[in-house]
Amino acid sequence: MVSSSSISVIGPGRLIMVDSANKTDRDTAVIDREVQRVRKVSPKYKVLLHNDPVNTMDYVVEALRQVVPQLSEQDALKITIETHNSGIGLVIVCDLEPAEFYSESLKAKGLTSTIELES
Image (cartoon, rainbow, N blue to C red; front, side):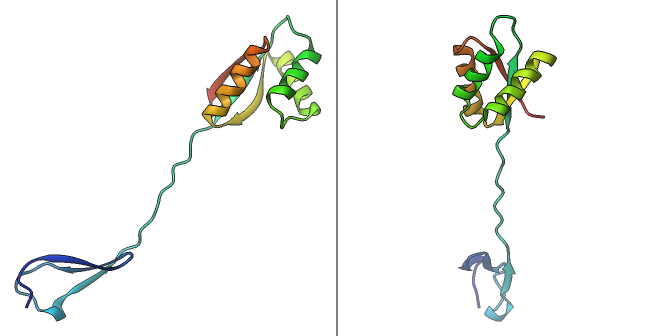
């Protein structure tokens, strides 16, 4: 006979529970439980480029390629034209830290840039 309540672990995800002072060993309940891990996805941020009347398109294309090396010349040109035509252009979507870095680097080159949470 078991004299007190107890919980024993017999392996990953398996428990033996004895919940009464008057139960015998053959009254032991086995509870199987799966352990699940939930991984949160970090939010993404948009790096935006704002149009300005000061910098030439060639300069903006070159600055974009220097700040965001994974952009091809064609991608940088598309972003520049989008920014020129609509007033704002999407440079890249990434985690917060790189987004802040890209935006600050564009500002250091005389461009106007902001970041915003991707919706």
